[in-house]
Image 1 (cartoon, one colour):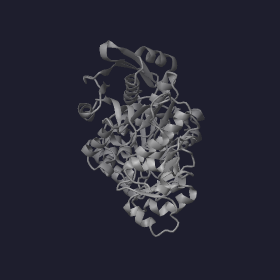
Image 2 (cartoon, rainbow, N blue to C red):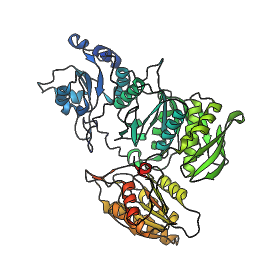
Image 3 (tube, one colour):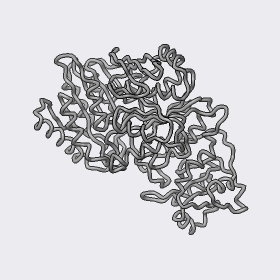
Image 4 (spheres, rainbow, N blue to C red):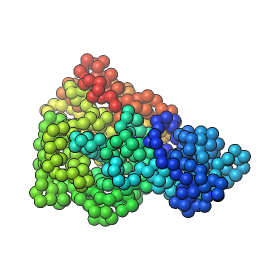
Length: 545
């Protein structure tokens, strides 16, 4: 999922603004002088009574009655789009000194302008104020936030599915889609900008939802998309190398994640302590922490004590304080999905749900067999063909290990690439991992963005070839592009007893090349190639998002 829309320039750089209304139909109007009081900016008397009913960072999503927030961007300043915002119905503008200077020569600025030093710092709290998104009392949403490098998406789907099984209608905000009690809306960002987040939560409340599960990316924390929120329960999955193009070091990456576990952002926390980063977070978090371990020998408040295969998935027991136990099943393959399911369960327990009530819901609904688009998504069974979002070293290793068949003579064919304009250090490492864990490695393109696709492939290929030669690995390494051709090659090589893993893009339906979005869905390409060879594929509703 792209996280490039961080400019605050009034328009998304690679995709059109969504026409979906991410806000409730009814809003309690807020006077502009109340907004001024909240941010410490005086409002002239004539403008004091101006009524504000919404807030937007994007001139193309402004509605009548909105406060338009003009932020400085990497390329353009949001003030450059003020005229369009006013034409769309903005009743006031919030900006910084630079934005005010851009507005000053304009004779069309017919609305009051509030000036603050750092407008992004106040967007979240103002969004909460305008939409009443976190108001208490009857109808208040229970809010679950999940962060970590891998597992955020599946864990939030699991939380939502479990809450629904308990009879609590729940919403979802994440990488794949937004579920707010109506039709699903495809996501542009893992975590939307804060006005959309607060508007969505208010919309969920208006539609009678009881809770919401949200992915919280490091970008969301860094770019203040979750400001003004206090999660009832925050959860941590793991931390592995990723996004170092933004954070530069693992310590900085960790520090950003740790900000979620402070009193201004969360009331309680559940931290998976299977890795050193989780143990460090649990020790330093500033909110009450419940720990979870799925790794043998790691002490925690809740631990996975037994696992057994059941079909493609796993049955396991989760033991907690005072000997309390839960018997759980997930139909999704891989030990990481045991960890995701266990985290979802403990987060719901920490929110106040009784263990016996929870066990009844687990037994009656099997909530962790829910399909998560592009996450260990099975397209066919002979050969086993799986699409997964694994796009970093740890996720790729786990995915390859999860789909490896124990049947003698079966081969594992891996198709993947690396994303452009991202951490280049993980490219050879991903190639080496694939060479160690797969029998045939097909290196292809992911989303090159504005980077040269051949150079990206070369980085991955170098890692795979070096590992094969140094460690005398028996794998075959191929470079095949474009991506649809690589998927067809994998299917041509596959026998019914083999397994194909297409990794890196998961649910995504567009491939970005030099600023152009090309239609490409790994699931559709895989299905088409399998059908052409006469293999049976699963029903459409199993692979469509």
